[in-house]
Image 1 (tube, helix red, strand yellow):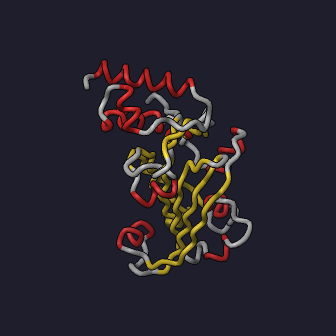
Image 2 (cartoon, helix red, strand yellow):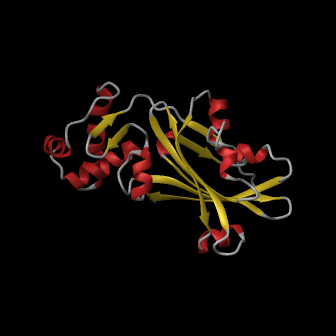
Length: 237
């Protein structure tokens, strides 16, 4: 399919999505592809862009649903902030869903990231963040046990490891280095976010440093693009 027919397909899909109320289920892929006169592969490619914008939600084995007007978490990247902090500033309610806290031995990647020996005991905190009933982010933080233990997140924890660390004045946090790219969702992340495998996500990998140069948090975050607007203000130099 050439560029113009593909754009026309996107226009037709946009009209259909816009004409339906929130939570409406679209026809099945075979039926929709037949109506629009395209292959299922082409239809999936077109629909993926609407998923990225947060306009559609696919649920494995159930179907594809229309989402109403999408709330967006807007944040600059110049200052490190938790999702909770951004949500409070933008008046968008978020909540933590599934929480998985484990003690794990450092593998090669984690040991290198935290500058500790392989097999060093670490605390891993994984959780899903929701707005309403929609999962929008999957977050994993890996920390030395002298920085955070499982008991630290047993009660009162609402999702932000960063906010917990910021309240620990002994740490003297100074900066974070974050690598950002777009990736396809792995099966584990796809299940957590209720999307399809290989759907596009924003992927942040961050190292949080103290004043003395120690890495105290190695975090891997996955964000649904349609729900987040990140920007950077840069000086002309």
